[in-house]
Length: 428
Image (cartoon, rainbow, N blue to C red; front, top):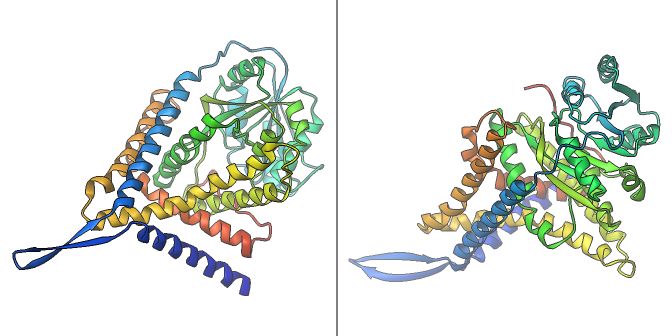
């Protein structure tokens, strides 16, 4: 109980401190002047204006880079038979959505493809649904008897049970584009060892639309500078195609890590695995359907990021390789963005109070404009069915994302004991 209250106290203290520091750094200066028997206060907010312009410039630059990368990333889809691919679909309590991945993979343009659904022994509904889907000739299912209890274990177990040189991993709720695997194999033929695809939350509701905006702004766009100046690339546990040799080099997915994909990405980076991003032919996934699921899912991710950072720091060996030192630096930099978002909120508040509507509105307009621009691109490509009006609320996700990250970090430090949050899929 004391640790729980310490966690709450730490969370509130950090939030208040970050917000207060942001205000103090705004350099609030009062200049008084006499106007017709009335004193007027003029707010000079140099740092707040600078923060607004800097944040706006960052969003524009990263947004343009993402648009450019999406435009250039058009690999060939003519490669259809250069080796068997086994598509692994780890599933846990995913019976209502399991058909999405399996049926879309069966429509893949890649010819030599087999599909393996991996379920946990305790998931009776999942086993029943997997058995039904295994009635197709190209689908089989396994019960995770090797490393039960985690997504990582399910993937590793399936990889040991099959013999394919090429493996692909998809979430149970993914709708995989028919051309993803042929395009990915084209990159494999060009030398890639891992090809990471893009996933698009379906924006079919308010929370789902905000999840879509978060995906394009805070995930794909925000990483552009990192990708531009370093060789680090995300290599996740969904929408990913990889050589067996790459998986064996890093020892598989880490079963002890809450966010196995984040840990896998750094393992690939430190092992110099050639990871290529594929922005074309994205998968459609289910987003969180309510605020509780959205909050719980983000908090789980951020807790996992803190766990990965902890592991990277404690395992750092500077003498071995500079990437051992750079990895925790990159991880910490990515996580520090959560503090920046909350600090920016305080500065924008000062701008609004000061009557500086232009500098207050500028980053908001840019964030909304970029999100709608990406949505239009996905709409014209047929990835999403509409451009939801709720995208105008995209600025709301910034402070909540920051709060979820801070809460996750304080929980990891004070109270986390390996538990994790699971969202409801297939239920709205």
